[in-house]
Amino acid sequence: MHTIAVVDYSMGNLRSVSKAIAHVADDVRVLVTDDAEAIANAERVVFPGQGAARDCMAAIERHGLRGVILAAAREKPFLGICMGLQVLLSHSQENRGTELLGLFPGEVRRFASGMTDHGQRLKIPHMGWSQVNQTRPHPLWKDIDDGARFYFVHSYHVDPDDASLTAATTDYGIRYASAIARDNLFAVQFHPEKSAAAGLTLLRNFVQWKP
Amino acid sequence: MGLAKRIIPCLDVDAGRVVKGVKFIDIRDAGDPVEVARRYDREGADEITFLDITASSDQRDTIVHVVEDVAGEVFIPLTVGGGIRNTDDILRMLNAGADKVAINTAAVFNPAFVRKATDSFGSQCIVVAIDAKQVSAEGEPKRWEIFTHGGRKPTGVDAIAWAKRMADHGAGEILLTSMDRDGTKIGFDLELTRAISRAIEIPVIASGGVGNLQHLVDGVRQGEADAVLAASIFHFAEYSIGEAKSYMREQGVEVRQ
Image (tube, rainbow over all chains, first blue to last red; front, top):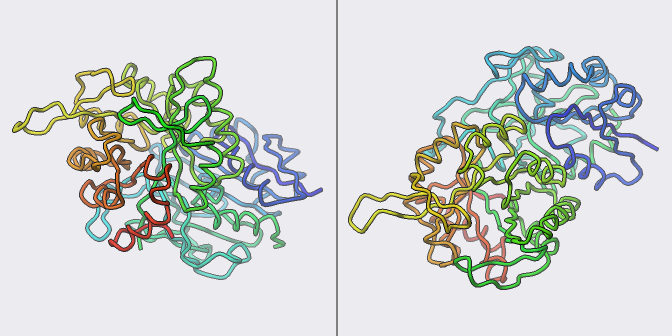
């Protein structure tokens, strides 16, 4: 049986992620784990995360998962969610500057205070349902409308140096990359596990993805 | 197109059943929470909030099972409030499948608890619920204070100052209920909502007083709320979430389809 490892490094509530994947995948074992060997042996890896950048990095090191996460991100179907996207870059402005995993050169930036949209003040965190505009075709977008809304909650966004990584953009005061993709890796700022039908479709696409 | 205004149905849960008090007194049974949550999800609710009003301590665990059951089938954000007193309570709710918890009375008694909660679990899952009541007399500049214990106990704390303080403590959003309006069906306290929304950078959910769909529009337009919460108009099928969204869209409010 196919195993999907949901990386558990004590950063946030992984129950929704594992329940949502189990909901869309029939003959798949969903394993919520911090065990490096189990992650290395899984066919697919989901890398979620919530909270502050420095705490996330410290937790990855504490659980001894840096190597196995980077290996999975290079080798097998890999889905990063929220902080699981951000820590793939090299550096974050959060916590007065935090070094990240550095798989992709680029900066994680805070939304500027006082942004407006059509005269309306934009709150921080960016919380709620925004449109995800697909910038190129990808198997994970199958059956998802371009511009479909997904659920977001974040105060920082990624700005990868290599613009060709971007798979979708979202507008919130500025236009930023809300999904990136390369080879076997897909990572999103929004929460597919909390995004109703569109989110479940994306998770189903991930489970069936053969990169 | 920008951020959609959220419509959040609220389920008041007592010993595992959905109820809704009118001014916290008159209680009518409105059904099985899992059934109701499923229906709201189908109709396009953007989030669901559970408010646990169970009084007897031996039935306090029923809300955990409700959240577990709902989280297994409804994949939108779930918030649980009522009786969240310490980090163990928060952990229990998050482990049951809640995405956010709403803290009210415990924040008033111990504001540092909010800081501790946001440090431990992240701002994204900590909502501070504020029950506010107008205390200024007719003709005076408007002033509101916060109340605890379901609106029964005054605290003497100014509502706007309190909202700012909670935002400084790391709260991810504010759930603002007007005690003057709750259960009245005459609409949100728009002045209160606007005053709080303008005072802080985090999102504000307006609550208390919704009796028709125009009230929802007024809440985001005049109240400048980021989300609107309502209970009774949805429970008793006076309106569906879908009707609420169609109406808001017709009035030019951006909502999720």
